[in-house]
Image 1 (tube, rainbow, N blue to C red):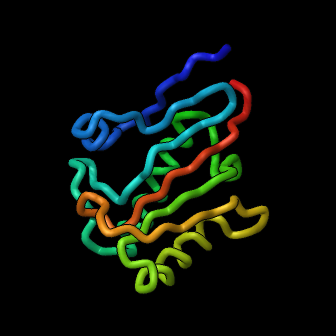
Image 2 (image 1 turned 90 degrees about the horizontal axis):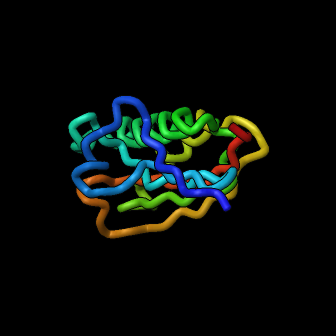
Length: 131
């Protein structure tokens, strides 16, 4: 039986320590990535929404890199939006750059009222190559 292994990216932001969670947990060949936000290194939100979404994806990429995975290893995505109707166009623009061609991961978008000062969060499950 495999043991759960915490994963952190290099230069990780302050939110992990402030809120006591791991960026991701590897369990066997699965990687469960905690919600990634558009946080600056000090943990504060990026105020420009488009930049916040891109930074959330950049932070996600850093976690995947730290685990030896890539975007193509993602099988499940859940995103959280504080104003989905107003934000979906911007999110889709960034998403189309991050996932430019099929096969696309499955995706569930959820409207929420609070994200601790952020407006977008993305969490994923990936199946990573053997170490």
